[in-house]
Amino acid sequence: MSRLQDSSKHLDDPAKLNEMLSERGYVFLRGALGRKKILAVSNDIISVLRSYGFVPPGATEALWSGKVPSGNELSLGYGGAVKKINSLPSIRELILRGGQVSLLKKLLGGEIYSWVENRDRGIRIMLPGRLSYSNVGGVKGTTVTPAHQDNYFFRTPNYLTTWIPLMDIDEAVGGLAIAEGSQKNGYYQHWYRGAEYLGVPENKDEARSWSTSKGRPATGEVKAERFSWTWLNTDYQAGDLLMFHPMMLHRGLENTSNKIRLSADIRYQRRGTPTIWRARHTFTYSKKFETSIRDTVNGLGLEPNLALKVIDKLYVEGPKDSDLKARAKSAAKALYLNN
Ligand SMILES: O=C(O)CCC(=O)C(=O)O
Ligand SMILES: [Fe+2]
Image (cartoon, rainbow, N blue to C red; front, side, top):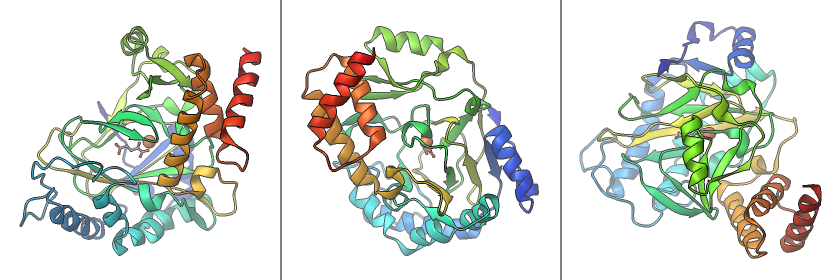
C-alpha cells in the first residue's frame, strides 16, 4: 500500500486542484475541513451510538462495546441508529454547508447540488470485522466495502464523491484505499454470485476463483483483472477530505481495531447540470426500487446471464410509470435478440 498525495498546499488554487482531479482522479486535502469542527460532529454520532449500546458508557471515542447489531440497526439508510444519526442537525449542516461544499463551489464554478440520497446514506458506521449482511436492495454483501467504481451505482460522469473521515482512521481502523490511475480505463466489470455482490476482482487469481465458484460479471465492459494496482491510502485524520472521480476504483479496508469506523461519503455536482435518478431520490427509495427489479426479473425464470443484463438495464433506466414486469419482458427480448 502506498500513500495518497496530500494537495493541501494548493487549497487556494482551484485551477491546480481541478487539474489534479482530471489527471490523478483524486484530490486528498489534509486538514481542509478543520479537525475541531469534524470532531464536534463525530461527538454527536458517538452519543447516539452510546445510547444504542455500541459504545460503552463514559467513552468519548468511538470505542466498540462489543455489541452486535440486532437486525438492521446499523444498516446504511435503514437502521434505527443510522436514521437517528442522519437526522442530527450537525450532520445535516456538514452535508449541506460543510467546507467541502464551499471548496466544490470554487472547483465547479457555481452553486452546488447536494444529492438527495446524502440525507440517508451519507454516514457509515463500520464495526470491526467482516460481517455478512443480506437483503439491502435484494443484494447480499459484507460490511467491508468490496472494490468498485461509484459508476457502478451512479451511471453518470457528472458528480464528485467526497469521502470524509469523522475520526482518526489508521490502518487498523481501515478506511478507504483507491487504486492509482484506475480512473483511466473505462467501466470495469462488477461481479455477482447469485444475489451476492462481489464488486471488481482485484487480480487474476480473484477473478479465476470467482468464476469457478459461479460468480459472473453483471455489468461493466473492462476486465479489471488485466491490470495490476497500486493501492493508495493514508493515516486519515479528522478534518481531512478525499475527493475522487466516478471511475476511480476504490475499496474499504477491514477494521481490525477496537473502534467503530465513522466516515461520510457524500456526492455533489454543479447545480443546474443534468442529474440521474439516483441523485434525486433517497437511498431507501432507490434500494426499494432495486429490490422490486430483482424480484420481478428473478420471477421471469431467465437464463442467469441474461437476467443480470436485464436487471442492469432497468436499473440504469430508473423508475418509470410503466409496469416493471412489462419493462423487464421487453428488455429481456431486446437483449436476447441483440446477443
Ligand atoms: O467507506 C467505505 O467503506 C466505502 C466508501 C465508498 O465506497 C465511497 O465513498 O464511494
Ligand atoms: Fe464507492
